[in-house]
Amino acid sequence: MNLAAANNESLAEFSNVLIYSAMAVYTLAFLAHIAEWTLGSRSKVGRTAAALTADGQAAAPRVRVARRDGGTAVLERPRVVTRSAAGARDFPDGPGAAGGDQQGDLYGRIAVSLTALAFLVEAAGVVTRAVSVQRAPWGNMYEFSTTFSTVAVGAYLGFLLARKNVRWIGLPLVTTVLLDLGVAVTWLYTESDQLVPALDSYWLWIHVSTAIFCGAVFYLGAVATLLYLFRDSYESKLAEGGSPGSFARSVLHRLPAAASLDKFAYRINAAVFPLWTFTIIAGAIWAGDAWGRYWGWDAKEVWSFITWVAYAAYLHARATAGWKGRKAAYIALIAFACFLFNYYGVNLFVNSLHGYAGV
Image (cartoon, rainbow, N blue to C red; front, side, top):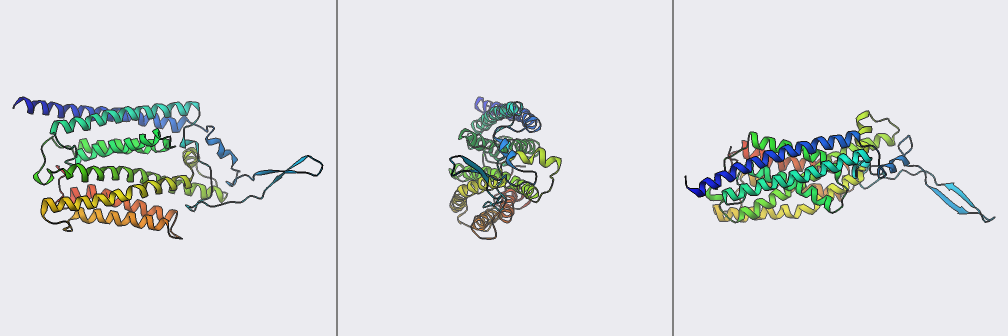
């Protein structure tokens, strides 16, 4: 073994150490998020929920009117229960959108700090892997998984830096990242090696990197959509005068309003959809260079197109009367399930020209 090969092997081993270290820090972030949601109570952000009456409807606003004698009288407007674009009644955002009380907020800040630290460690592991193989670090499922989770966390931190109230994503995100990395290091791990000839192209940097970014953002949209369904049911029960269970009172009331969750999911899905379209086009161009045809109805190509159709249906449903709200949310979750099958199912269980799982 020459010196260069030995150095590359050492870098690959160091990359593995960094990935495991990131998992350890993510675990601490997970515990901190649990502490935030367990110990955090209503903050000044969440106290807007106190405007809700016992039956879940908004308290009637008071209006001051001038009297003829020069004084003022305070009148109450009739209560009006309005409905958001998502089909849910208008409720204020819960405190989970931007922290809890002083103690809960402290744990939340610790959780975000640990998540940022884990992100840096994991990103270093991805870069080290790339240096060790001297190519893009997404040539197999193990590398794709580690890069995917890194980009997802990076997108979350980017929203926080942009002062978006997305702290509520932290717990499900860190939980998913730990599961993703656990699967990657346990079942998907592949020794660092060079690419098969079909992948040795500059299109690997363009096509796969955009696919990873799209998947990471689609994931954030899927989390928001799933939480929207839970929060919408919670708000509907309140509006009907019902009494939610202890789980709903301790967790769901802390989430942003259903309308806010629905709007967030729609905006990021709509924003990344054109990039997913470009991903499919770039893949077709690469296929033309590698295999001499732009489209051959290979399983990966088919499921990429099915994912595109599903997200197009979701965006169309959002603009169609009668399909907003929960119906559109179900389509969005189906679309993300298609993306997941395109990644795991096609790579592991389907005989495909794109079968570069390495496992």
